[in-house]
Amino acid sequence: MKTKKCIDWSIGLAVLLAWAPFGCGHVIEPDEVEGVPDGETDNDADTDVDTGTDTGADADTDADTDADIDSDTDTGYTTVEIAPTVSGTLRHLPELSILDFAPVGGDVQSSYFKTTEENREFRRGIIEFDVPDPPGGIVGAQLVFSDYHAWTAYPMPPDEHLLKYYDADVLVSVEDYDRGATELASFETDGNEPEVLDRTVEATEIVAAHAGSGLGFRFQLAVPETYNEEGFLGSGFSYISLRITFAEDD
Image 1 (spheres, rainbow, N blue to C red):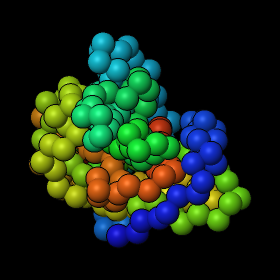
Image 2: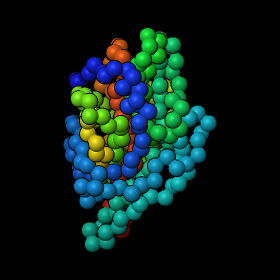
Image 3: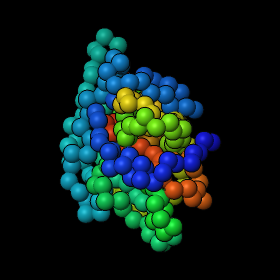
């Protein structure tokens, strides 16, 4: 597990304010997620994410149920890309006994921030899907996303994130912050990397097991909640979709 001592908080604040979402490639095994710079992949995902209406709890429910569909009649398989049914970010401020929704709508963040003795804040991003149950069965699935974060030339170690999955009720709630979940992958984001990285996580087994039910994913930093350094860690994630391949029903 890699942790880091952050840069001076004033620089960290500037980094935080510089966040801006950018605009998802290359299948890898779930033990470590690797990324490729935007524009250097042949598998760009063109998926609308976080375009729905708020649920009233600063979580996003995507009202657009359309999915990108790629049907190959020669092979008998069809691939679809679906956006999360709901998404949002939960925050925990231990010293203030606060556990609630971060005021970022349906944005997905995995981060840490501290500038005073009392405002230590951890954020975890939540996405949940209604997984379809095609008659021909699910034969392939990947979680696709891009990370976005502020860039700085000041040398900084990368941040390690964990991606976990769980049985979902398809409704973002504060219980999802530490709901029992299984680690699917770990990966790093780098504040010294100016490129937006597109990432793909292999998830066929767990998606097939959740066909016809809810499946949730949680993005969270690998640092424990005892971490107490001043500064900023983390990243946001966008252009999230679940790419599912299924056999066409004869």
